[in-house]
View 1 (tube, rainbow, N blue to C red):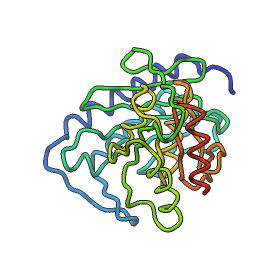
View 2 (cartoon, helix red, strand yellow):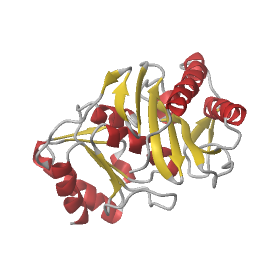
View 3 (cartoon, rainbow, N blue to C red):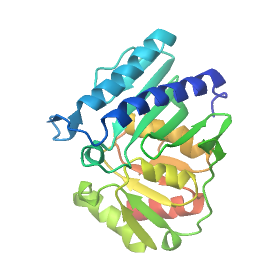
Length: 259
């Protein structure tokens, strides 16, 4: 564990989310130009405008801090404090009018996650957790729930088609054991798990801007976040994530993934 996150950074994360939320709400369900990245994922001017706003605010307020984001090159990635952001997680949902997308904002100190925020600007729901500060949603406490086994668990993943080959076989072992499996939601399902409404999340293909903002928020709500092997995340992790609200269901799910 690292030392408590300074409250000023929690306040600043809220200010970042307030700013990006205004940008995103203004453009939601309006005509947009959609481009595609080399990996075929969509990107809009809103993704870039929101990330630019974050970067500008970090430069103005904490010029010694670094920023790693989804849309632009990293700035000072070796700084002691580094903000890791995905300005619009769930762009496919955004461009089709689905309101479950969100903004992810995380803070690393010495490479370790000390703060995580998920903001859903259309739903106006915001989860935040930081070291030494319990997770909350819109100011109310958020806490994971007990779940004794995968057979009793509600499992979430964004897109089952992302699991290929042996990853698909591993995911199906968990899915076929779980009580209920839900699809879609992008980052929204992580907030639901932190609030004790979901028990398991299994995904692949995530980048640092996807997983780092989740970690402190989930852990300070009482949950567990690792890669499929049980290792903590770093910049070189392979993007396979296992999140659970209960240690028992986490252990069983990891065994099922391993086979």
